[in-house]
Image 1 (cartoon, rainbow, N blue to C red):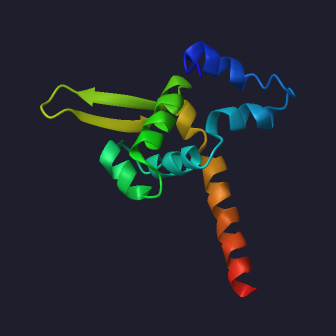
Image 2: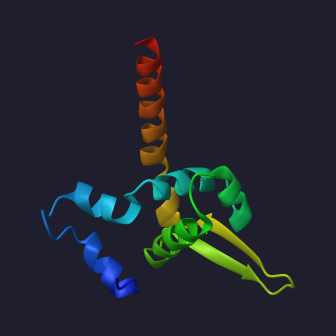
Length: 119
């Protein structure tokens, strides 16, 4: 699988259907990307904090998802020249523009869970 920036940008063009929803899902689709982005809405987080907030995801999966989000310009990876290395992740302006989408997903999920608990 080619994870270069050029390859990722080609996926964002929604080549299969031309639909804007496909373009959005090519960037934030999957189980862990929206969860990671939702946690980053609060501000900068270190890798281990993201791992603690998503205990069902493996560190390897989190790393892969963060790399893809970084390649798509959704998050910034900040490396501090320290020993041991300190790395933080934060949303870019493009990433922060996803806030209404992520908050709507959270609200819809809350309503779905409430309906399921009533049944």
